[in-house]
Image (cartoon, rainbow, N blue to C red):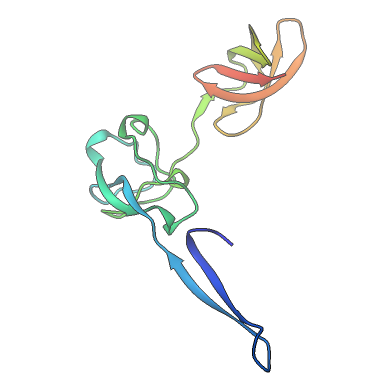
Length: 156
């Protein structure tokens, strides 16, 4: 069972004349600092520092983690509207597109104790959290994670 958020706790009696179990639903709240919308924000809003303010929020309210660094959110786009005072969570943000298909990208191939850097042409869009494909200068096609502006990381 999850340690926080909505969960349940069980109680068992095995020592009486009849054994029984009962489960009680409960909600565990975890309050800590996080960022909330300073005013209502519609979907599609490109975030600015003045639109966010720190507040004490319930981290366990949703499975998506709340955001705590305003500087990392500036320029990100909201995927859904937020009410004033609502916590800003990762699931509220649109994934970033680091590069488009056809762009020249820097390929960083990393293995245990080494790293190789080269260039290639993106065969797919480089969207945060999704695998992207790149054709290297040698013609080989590799797949990896977009990690920054026109950068992809390939694990070896």
